[in-house]
Structures are given as structure tokens and as C-alpha cells.
Image (tube, rainbow, N blue to C red; front, top):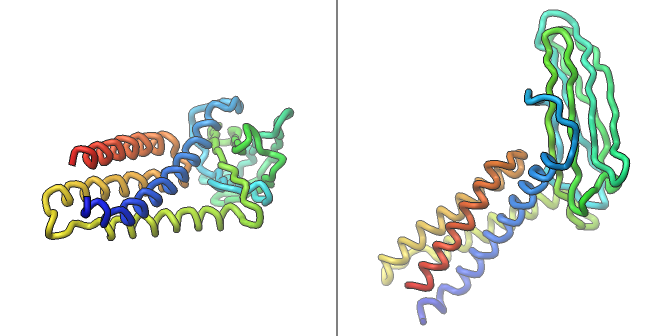
Length: 236
């Protein structure tokens, strides 16, 4: 009982960091998963590598998505770039024809704001590059998590959220590191906590990158490791 009482601050600190990180990457993965099933037009399985969306935005800010078209061929091309962006009711669509010399790239920008929020917490977007000389049809999708945080931008909120999760998790691990008087079980618990922290930070990386499937797998790993740690604590 005395040992558990001494560990309580570290347990609370570590649990807070894991919870913050899991909520972050879980929300980011959820946004990208919802985007896949939102109903945006699907034309091809060839990925478009030029779509860039912010992983997180706030309701009060105006941000943007960027689509970059490249010409990697030896002749000029003029592909049409089209975007579909969520809006309640009638979906926003726009398209631009891009003229590119050999080796040239051009970035197109569309604004995102509270007008594009749908399902209360998300903005969804899809970009298409229609075919031209040796340039195939390609598409890509992104989902953006929207948080109500007045006065903050999505970038600042993401940095604060990630920073707090990192600080609390690492501080908790340090407070809970094995002591000489309890070597056996403490070492096992320490290894489990480190594995949980690694799974959580891996999930954040996938969430920021928009890789929803690895993010979901990381979430499953976090849940399983959390259950193992709780069970081990009860049986200890």
C-alpha cells in the first residue's frame, strides 16, 4: 500500500500523457477514416502525392489545402486539377487546368473555414489530377479534425497538445522507473509502460501523416497494452 501511494503521482502523470496522446491520434485517425466513407467521388486507386491538408484546425481559423501538380516528363502537359471539399448541404467543387513545362511544378491553394465543417468535427477534401500525356488519373483524400479552441490556430493547438502529451508521458515514465527495493514486478511494469508510450507516439506520427489504417492499429495496441497494465496492477 505504501509503495502504491508513492507511485500515485507518477501513475496519474503517465496516464494523463497517454490519454492526451491517444485522444489526439485517435481523433486524427478518425477524421481520415471518416473521409474515406464520406461519399466523395472515387475514380481511381492511383494515389495523388500532391495533396497537403492540415491534420487539425480550429473553428475560428481560416486555413487552406494545397494541391501540387508535377510534370516529370519530357513534353509540356496541361492536366486538370479538381477538388471536392465538404460543406453542409451542397458540396464545394472547383477545378483548374494547370500548364506545366517539363520538370515544372505548380501548387494550387483552396481556403478552408468553418463553412466546410461537416459531421460537427471534421472537414473532408479530395483532390483529383485528370490524365494528360503519360500522366495518369490520380486522387487522394484527407480528413481534418476540427476543435473549438478560440484564439488558437490548428498548428499552435497541435503543438501544445503534442507537447503536453510528450511531457506528461516522459515525466510519468521517469517517476515510475524501477527502484531497487521492488526489482521484479517494477521492471516488468516499466517495460509495459514504455511499450505503451511507444505505441501512443507511433499512433501520433501516423495520425499527423493521415495514415488512418496504421493509426487504428496503433489505437488497438494502446488499448491492449493499457488492459495488460491494469490487469498486472490488479494482480500485483
